[in-house]
Length: 182
Image 1: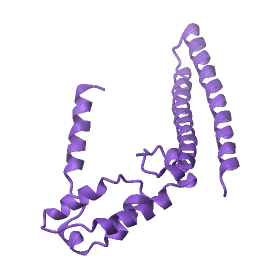
Image 2 (image 1 turned 90 degrees about the vertical axis):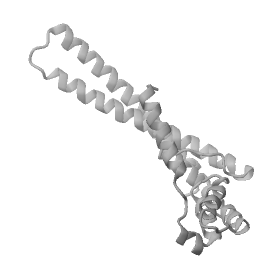
Image 3 (image 1 turned 30 degrees about the vertical axis):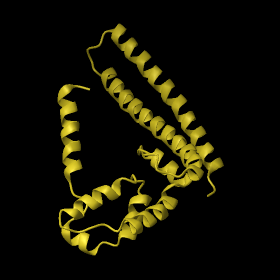
């Protein structure tokens, strides 16, 4: 990663890390169970309660850890399903290893299938962009025969790879339909 890009990533992380999770009004009225349930259902880390506790401490208010943890565990039941694992992976989402052991295997299997599907779709999109650029290059008037032949060869390679990836995508979709209870 280039140094200037690394600095932007670090600066962004610092800004996001310094944002309070709750304001004073929210700290005074929050339903800690519901907040925990939302955090769990979104796949948030258990350490999220620390962020909430710190935010409310700025206003001299505490957190109801017991209610939050109870809600968090309930939220994880919604998050840690195979169906959701596939959805998170297919959207290119990150999994933070929050699922309890009994549910994690099914979640991870589906997540990995969804993630593979996501990666194949991304590569297909990139190849489609590449094919379009090559086609535009081919319509230029002033290309010698060798350049035109090379562009056609590259385009053929892109089409071949794209066809292979589309077959892979079909296979992945069939695999998910086979596994999915719906």
